[in-house]
Length: 337
Image (cartoon, rainbow, N blue to C red):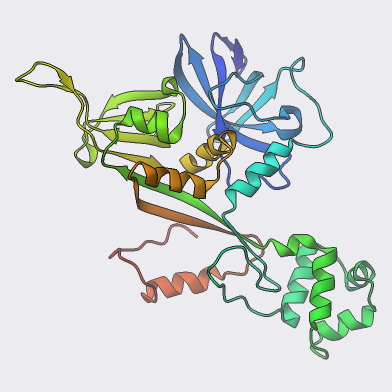
């Protein structure tokens, strides 16, 4: 039983995963909740919920202690947990921190160019103007910065006036007192497609994804020469397309044609990250496992979360418009701003 916009329903709320890219410092997180009735998911809601009240994240497909959902598609939905079940804590679950680490397949530092991926990143050196910008974004005065760093205010003033250069020692001190500057860019997977020539959709769900069969809705499709698809919670976030079973006209036996493609869309990758966490796996483990089933990547999109404005969007748009990029695709698009 759950109340949706003051209307009591007979639905049972089921946890389907988190749906946002960045969970760091989030007091509220976005999750997807399925409304189950007679063992079937009728509809889904993307709701914000208190990370502190929620405590540990439930397993995918398990019941979640939500008492009420209010809001709309336009303004967003909020969930209220059952007070009797909610475990109020001073801090959010450590599982959220594990999910943060799993999401970020690469992190780069703006100040020193350190990284945990093999590919080198051409990171600019810290300039006087950068320091002014960083101080403004941190919301501190020259005096406050000098006190925090334990240096003379005159040094800060001279650097910002371009009367003095920035030393390696200064950068190390800045990183020590503001460790958030060491995590400027986060790299995450945003779309994953894998083709399996020897599997059916059910085998992909059971053996590759290792998700519950009853969380998927079967329906016909004519896309990509396939005849059916299995959609997670009935939505096109995580779905598998393959050939429907057919009756052999000679033997009259029901046979299954092999060959299937798995799609994890932008939202789908975020939902699936919780499943990876439950299986004590990361993305690398998942791709290695897919290879064991002869799966090969057909699409892999990367999202770059640039928290401090290292990348200039106007420069990137101009570079795309002037075709100063390499791609197998013959088309491009700039969406919105």
